[in-house]
Image (cartoon, rainbow, N blue to C red; front, top):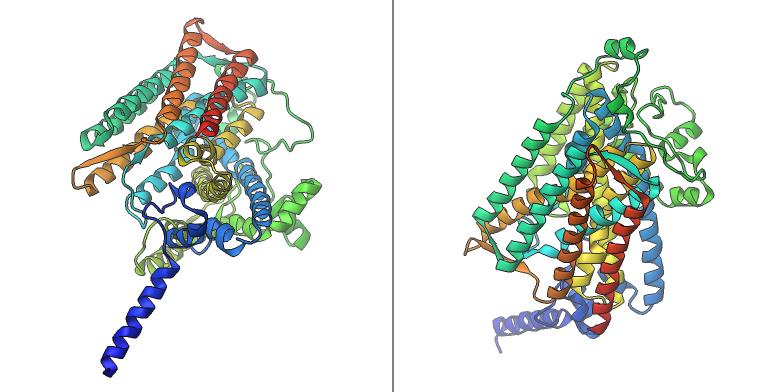
Amino acid sequence: MSKGGITLLLVLALVNAAAGIFIFPDDCGRPRFVSVPEEFKCSCAHATRVSSLDYLSFHYCTLQDAPILSLALLSVLLSLLFYVVGNTTDRYMVPAVTYISKATKLDPSFAGATLLAFANGAPDLFSCVASFSGAHTHSGFGVGGLLGSGLVVTVFTFGYLAYLSGGFDLRKQPFMRDVFFYFTTVLALLAAYRVGYITVPMSLIALTWYAVYTFVIVKTSHKPIEIVSPKDEDEKQPEAEPETEKKEYVAVAVDESEEVSLNAETISTIDEEVVVSPRSYWSQVTNWDRASTFKKCSIVALCPLLFARHYTVPIVQPERVSRSAAAICVFAAPLFILSVAARFMKLHYLSFFIATACSVIFSAITWFFCRETSIKWRIFGAILTLFLSSLWVFVIGHEIVAIMFVLGVSLGISSGTLGILVLAWGNSIGDFVGNRALVRQGHVHMATAACVAGPIFNTLVGGGFAIFLGCLQSETQTVPIWSADQKAILVTGFVILALALISLLALGCCFKDDVSMSKTFGLFLIGLYMTFCAWTLCEETQK
């Protein structure tokens, strides 16, 4: 046999050997991973991984001989990530929202329906765009994710906030406005689900409907947007607060063992430039002095992550903005955004150089032109904090989703149940923790408005824009809806969500001025969500 023939045979043998390593069924993929035979799970996990850090490969390949140890390690990591999400929301996101609302004199309901909803939904919008333009390819659009997030945020979280605070009063007009728009959005989503596919005109209608919603919010807002200068703040200090502002704050029962901080008036004002002691610096980064024993153990385990967050997200300081901290964060922000984008889409190699150039330019501008006592620079710093902290919550939330997916698959939970129950919680954890922190500090109107406006933004803008991109890439200009194997679960979800929204509308109609949200009604909403979870799990066990 000639030398060329031998070479050809060797090449073919290597190809066949490589193919033998990654033999897996035709339906191998993350959405249907639970149905993959046990002997092919490792090969399937390797073949479908999109990053070096992959929990599915870790469980089924790296520790395939020690599944109990793998589940234990993943559970510990999951607990640590939940701590980081809560700490990031309490330490950065909530102070930024409350400061921007106060400095610009935004109506609390307006701030919750726009600013907070956008902060919670912008990372999800980024994810939706990446899902149709990145390394992943999708054959359709999942209704379960949007429906599950709505159930978590609007039904469970809303009810939990009412239960946590012991009841509160809400202004009727913004409350009824938000619930009505979300109810019509759910009806439109149900109509699209019944049709079975979504077209370009349907996605444009969704985006237009959100534009109408935003226009109505602006027109019905009680207060004009106005930036408060330091001089104005000094002049207005002796004056009594308006009655409408007092309604925002309510008495909330809080566990004394929990840390209650980060109000716009109580934010730590430590100047980072005067911190010279290593212990003081460590405490500033990790909040070590006020942490419990469990939190200190978590801080030690998460030390690199906390320092990375510290250098990418500035701390909100109401009196002044630290020029050095702002310059460092502005320098790190483009590189941080690039690293996040690289996890979800393919980037050109020039992207790193462009991001580095932007970092240098923006950091230099901040260093030379930042006025530390300027109200505009303080608002800019708070907006930067809000955006970057929401991006951190988004990144950690996706890691939580990935771990919960592995735990769900290892327990044999189907993809439909994972999407509408487990993964919906992972995507909505930032909304839940942030709104809970706002209510604990008395910002009820802002938190409750975000409970309804957040799912509206995710459904109309996140879903609508993602579908629009998907339609443009599709040969038929349509995007089919995933639902074949979870029809009963989706129908139940639609019924529970519609029942909750109708109950909220009926409650609003019972009052002339302010809507009284009682603790009992909060338990009713929680009961609705628990009923849905119980029914879904029963349906899962029958399969």
